[in-house]
Image (cartoon, rainbow, N blue to C red; front, side):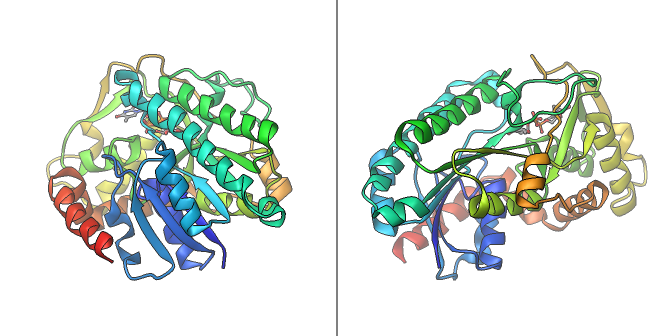
Length: 357
Ligand SMILES: Cc1cn([C@H]2C[C@H](O)[C@@H](COP(=O)(O)OP(=O)(O)O[C@H]3O[C@H](C)C(=O)[C@H](O)[C@H]3O)O2)c(=O)[nH]c1=O
């Protein structure tokens, strides 16, 4: 079985990918994660006894650490999920985004290049570096514009989007300059279990459960294309297996919704699953000042991945949202841990155990 180094595997998309990969026995996995505020090893607690999974705490920006790890585990592929991802945070504190997304990806590419150049010609040919990126690199659309294609020019608007765009360019340059066998995926907005409650969907679900205001930026008419995280993970697997080296694949949910509609749908689900005697959840909706430079609409043209690789998003938005709301209702321990210092203690105990193993 092949070995894959997954970076950022304790975060939302990375953890869902690792769980799916181990469930299906796709490959052995080494998970390298810095364990920032948004990662959570609890996401992967069920893999603690799995002999084909290992976790290491560390930064993709640490070339020495990554080089040692690559030499030790000799992976056949790397999937780079590690990133700072929250647009609002990037507006207030862009430095971390430059450090992790730009410098971190660059250092990871350097360590990978040194490792790859020493492989046998056959292993060099089979090796893959898959970089997970975002549709935000393409900028913002109006309602009349056609969806982003792989050849849409980059026009990032937020510091987050600019940092991901820079990382995509480095990945591209490493293929063209050194021949490193790279693939890049640009996805739309993900949703599903284990998402850190700073992003729209989990934030709205948890605020609504707690009876807190549901903040809607601006007029609530911004449009996002919502992709169920498991559909995204299946697409990544397919791109890794069958994607053409040096190319980019857009991955979207084919499911455009205004933010207002998303929030209303969550409220309707919660009125059914967790009714409040004194109010309907929609009465908590609160319009707040807009995000600076707020992109109006993202939409993805998925023709390339559909026609070349035969992928399709399977999850219907209403059923995916229902499953997601149910997951947050069923996992109050996870929610409390994420919100409190208890998670930090859990992390310390479990990480010490992992080191001793
Ligand atoms: C947190 C929050 C958000 N919003 C609005 C702002 C956006 O129009 C939409 C979704 O916001 P969110 O921050 O969840 O996601 P985006 O800014 O679209 O970016 C996300 O999708 C791309 C693909 C990534 O690559 C990002 O990593 C990911 O964070 O809801 C609100 O109206 N209220 C809120 O409280």
